[in-house]
Image (cartoon, rainbow, N blue to C red; front, side):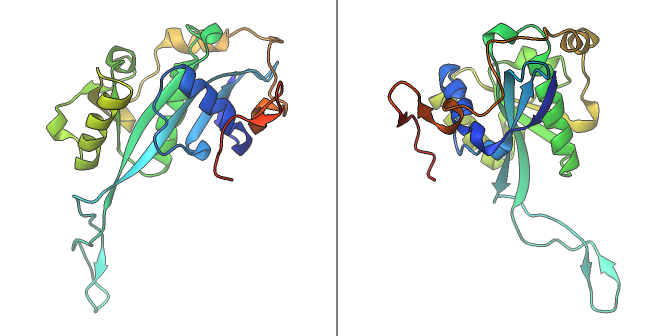
Length: 215
C-alpha cells in the first residue's frame, strides 16, 4: 500500500466517492488530492485533499531592499495563504487498516514541503484527527477565510464541524496505524488501477458522461 498524487483521469472516481460519502467537493480539483493504492492489485483504497486559501484579511511580511542593498523586515501587501486538510475518505472494505492515517500523513508532508507551518481542519471527526496531534481551537483563532469556510461547511455537509489545527512538526503517526497499513490486504482483485470507462466519466451501461468536468 502506498499514497500518491491523484491523476487527472481519476476525477470521476473521486467525485463518485466524495458524493457517496457525503464529503465536501467545494472548488474540486483532482490535483489537490492524494490517493492510497494497493500496489499488488492497483485498487484505490482512500483519498484526501489539501486546499490552499487566500486570506485577504491578512498581510504577508517579507524582506525588502531599502535601496542601499540592506534588507529590512517591512511588510509587503498581499493576501496570506492558509492550508486546510479536508475530504478524507476511505472505502468501506479498507477501513480500520491505517489507510486514512497515511493519507493524512502524506498531506501534512505536502503542506510542510510547501512552506506551511500550520494546517487547519474543519470537521466533525475531531477525535480521529486528535490522535495525530490536531488540537481544538476557538473559531476566533481561525484566519478569516476559514471562519467563513467553517460556517459554509456546517451548512452544506458537516453540521458538527469544529476548528482544529496542527503545527506540522508536531504530527505523529500512532504505531498501531503504521503497522496496520503495513499489513493491509494484498492481491485484491475486485478493482484495478488500469484505465476504465468509469475513470473517464463514462457510464458503461449507457455510454453517457456521468459528470461534466468542464473539459
